[in-house]
Amino acid sequence: MFSKNGIPLYVQLKEKLLQDIKENYKVGDIIPTEAKLENQYKISRITVRKAIEQLEQDNIIEKKQGKGTFVKEQKILYDANSIGSLTQRLAKQNYTLQTQALEYEIIQKEHYVKKLLNCDTLLCIKRFRVLDGIPFALMLNYLDIKKVPNLEENFNIESLYTFLKDTYNIEFYNAQETVEAKNASKEESKKLNIKLNTALLSLHRLSFDKYHNPVEYSDILIKANMYKHKIILSNDKMSNI
Image (cartoon, rainbow, N blue to C red; front, side, top):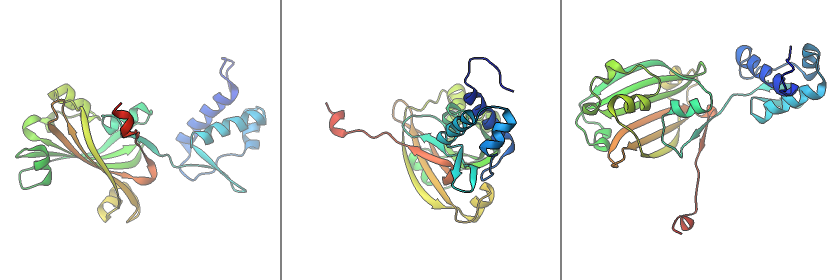
């Protein structure tokens, strides 16, 4: 079952269990006991225990006293300290974010984002995103339509920011982002396959180019139980030294 390639047996078992969990288990499912794994793979209990401990440390599984070991729902770490699309950030964590639905809307009537981007007509890109096949986020990206002619005819990749840089030479250098909690509406809960009023995190981001001109605004709704927001704080006094 396991090869003698210099990789410790517990690491090989951990990877085998991780693959098995991804392919055959869902959140809340119980995995085999240590005794069953020991018999199945013909390895020592110590090796099995160490592999299980590694999966616990990685938040893949959790032990419940007297009940067993269960598959945990994964939380995605969103690093708010760097510029980049959600797709780009999750790719660094080896997650696959895909677009399940894509719509475009041209907005000529009054809209609050027009003032933010200082434009007359908006192009709104509406995307429903899934993470490793699980409904994850609803995304709205607003752009000045004059700066992205024919985008709706040519956009065919998962990362909008990469597409904007390669196609329109639009690159983001800094941004302002706010995060707030909200309850899922009827429409949102239906799209994300969650119960009405389930907790969501709402991200609002205004991005700027290197000349500090606003170039894109986004509204993102993410399932709160799949998400962690990382922010690095610093001492203002130290930054002035």
